[in-house]
Amino acid sequence: RAIRRAMSWQRRARGPRRKKSDDEEAPEEKKLREDQRSSPLCAKLGVGCLVVCGLFTAVHLLLFRGQAITASAPIPDELRFVVMMNTFGEARKDWLQSSVDHYVACPVVAHVYVTHAGPGDNPLDANPRVSWLHREDTSLNVRFEPVEEAALDATFVVDDDVLVHCDDLLTGAETFHLQPDTIVGFCPRLHTRTLDAERPWRYNGWWRVGWDQQYSIVLTKAAFLHRKYLRSYSTAMDGAMVKAKEHVRQHKNCEDLAMQFLVTRESGRPPVYVRGRLADKGVFRGVSTKSNQMLKGGMKHFNDRSDCLNKLVEYFGENPLKTNHIVVGSTQRFAFNQPANWMEYFSSDMLTR
Image (cartoon, one colour):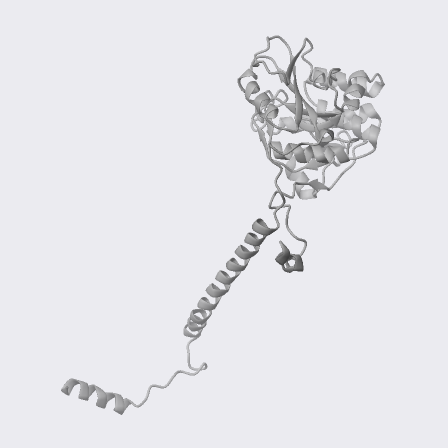
């Protein structure tokens, strides 16, 4: 009790504590005090933003999602297409069966034709929806030889090491149904001008496509084509296509660029890029890439492609390629099924779902 009484007398002697004014307070102390005051507010705002974003996302997923097309849903006959898969030699048989099984399982696929170039027997399991076509010629040009027994115009040309998700194949088929006169596919590329008079054109990969936000080439490693272009490529006798196919035969490369030149020249239209899920098991083991050692050879593959591009311009007497900036995607994908303005989430039909 005596100690408490003594401490009380000391406080009375000192007088009441006076709060420092803003002028007397050190800058460091003032900034610390302001940060302490603002931190809880920032935390509350951050949590509030997360809650609002989560609410909008839940509304989008639960109320505004479209009806997914499942394997049991009927596929319109006009959307069905045939798959033309090319394979070369013996090395690719390890994944060939799995690739064929994948496309046979897609309900939008009517039939799978496997074109095999070079020696070797049919290693595939028997299936009435799969046909094995043997070609003696090992040139990449054989991948575009038309299949006479194929009754459908829509043809999906694909490498044996490329797998496209079945839902995205349906999106591609729907896009091709609306754009049958051009190439519709999943791997865009771009040609650009250079300052080199001897090599005025450059072949560019995905990074340049994303940077420039446009493309002019869609690779036929996974693309839809009308079968009339397969006939045109295989039977063309004009000087440009004869030289182009001979270049492909000698260099085992650039058949997709030659096809893009042919289609754009005949249709006058650019290709169409469909964004989808694609697995490519042959990025560094492909016919045109495994011998080039892309990472060790100073991007030799892209240099070779640029050489092909300039040769094709020389053969055709012009560059017919046209750029496009349109990207097609399914509304079932979250990234594509967003409103133009966030206020549309509050539209009146929200309560009528």
